[in-house]
Length: 352
Image (cartoon, rainbow, N blue to C red; front, top):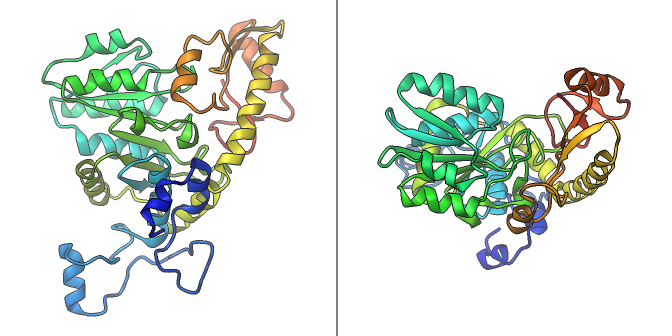
């Protein structure tokens, strides 16, 4: 959309539905076409040279840029109120690209101790091979984050909020102040909330990552990731790293996710309404020992959730009597809910 003032005035639901498209539609199409092309022709040799040098805009090769993928990047970046988005093949491609583009050997990271498992393995087992150290702390306590910072060495504070799967929240604004005071950037995995419920860049974060597989796509039929940078400098570093390492998205992937994001507001509003009802039900069930859902007043960060989120989300974590055996019994007994990993689709899923 060309009118920046009109874009800035849009609400979050309007952004999800209307932003991310072609600047000049080809035949008046309403839906963004799938540009399933690996390469793009140049009007002349001079134009090709100008595109490669950056003197002229235009497409060259889909690993470097594609109209369908760019439409999705524009959409998610706008919802996050960021400078620019970079779409990736998977959520982990987004996370690994973020680390590779911003960290060097000898750098130190402070991260939430309850992270998505693969992210933690990447930090502990893979990046450590290159001299990058990580201290995992309970970031819901700002003092723990502050004490873990190493002056002159900590380059990033990496958060998940709410966490996967324990549903613990971290104060993004306060953590940003701690990170920036020591010259570190604040990165936030915003997958569990989505930009519809939480926009970390507006709270002081420098960069946001998503598994688009989850709420943003919302139909359990495609995987993808996104990095949204808050500044031009950070965006350029991330973009360069992604195109060099090649973890880029496919046009058909982008089209499916862009189709899914158009209904994100409706889907998430209904999903979190259902989650609240289920959390209240579970809380009073005689075989449930505890329930962790940010919408319940007894959640330890209930007030924080009301401050930095527009809703409580649709993820619930709970425990049952008899521990593991009780959990197995629940999972093997459900009829409507599906026993499968992942989250954020139109189906309700359960996993241990």
